[in-house]
Length: 118
Image (cartoon, rainbow, N blue to C red; front, side, top):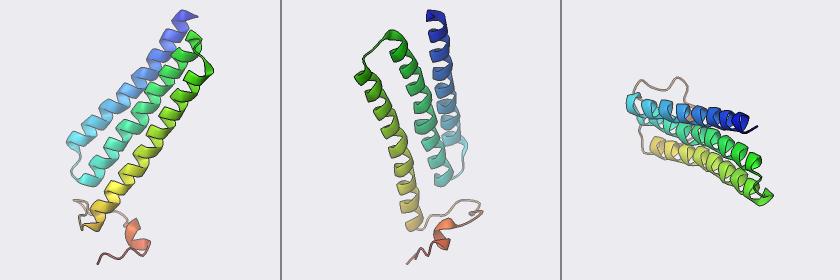
């Protein structure tokens, strides 16, 4: 039982670390703000999910109280939700300032929404 919990939480943590590493590489390699912002959101969203799953596996297997498990779930959900919202707000603010993607957008969704650049 202990070995299974250790392996399962280790795998979940490794998945989180993998996505965090991929996000860091994306921040260093992507050409413009919009792509880098997406990579940063990947770090906090997918990296946090892996770490939270590992923490939940450990908490459940160790017999922690229900309130600890609920707190872990709430913290994980808040990080995931606020990461997506803050990433979107930063990108929209940057778009409003007139910055555009280096290679141009494949599809300009803000322009379709009736966004007025003036």
